[in-house]
Length: 90
Image (cartoon, rainbow, N blue to C red; front, side, top):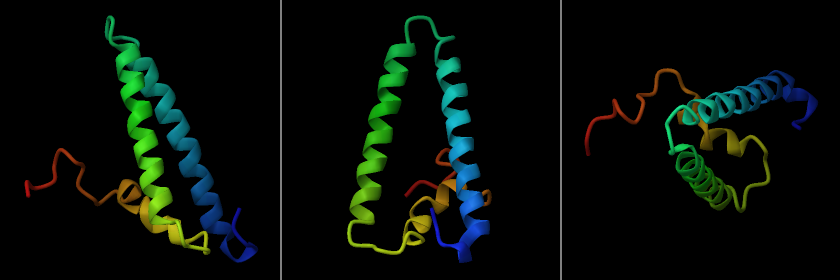
């Protein structure tokens, strides 16, 4: 995906994709435990994912360097960043 000079980062990004896939599978399984709610939960998740994809594409529309996209998802992957539930109210 990235040039040979970014092999370590490429490996981390591949691991992040695998982690995201596994998380999606676990969340879908968990949604199935809520009687009558799985379809609604999965549909909402698809909508949120689509919105995030559109935001990412707009953010990166004119970027040529594949590393420019790394900044876009950085908050989600930063273990020190507060989760949305712990962020201070604006």
